[in-house]
Length: 149
Image (tube, rainbow, N blue to C red):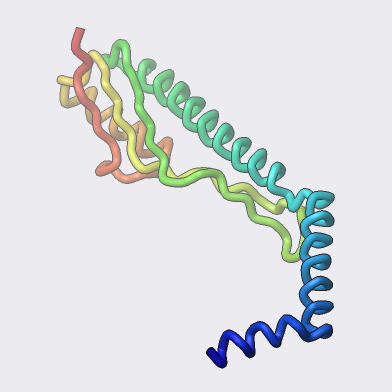
């Protein structure tokens, strides 16, 4: 009973009532003021979307370039290329600045080349050599196989 009584007595005090009212108004004021600030949420979402689009475009361009290169190798015939990447584009900025100093391209995780000449060991070796050198990746990250009709 003493706790209930002391709790009721606490709210009878004018100082505590004023403090609660002031704290309420301050809270409402902060909420109202926060509506005027954007906090860059929309910019961050737009930036993430641009980065995803840049990665997708980079991957598509690389697949097309690799396909064109591979199809120009003797004995390959028609080819299909799948490229997988490990991360997105990274941007390096100057310290305490919005100035971009460089852009780091995504890391290539693996490449699959499916081509008509994929059953010929000489063609496979040529494709493997061309892809690994062009992308500067190890042979363990490249698979070359035969395209079925």
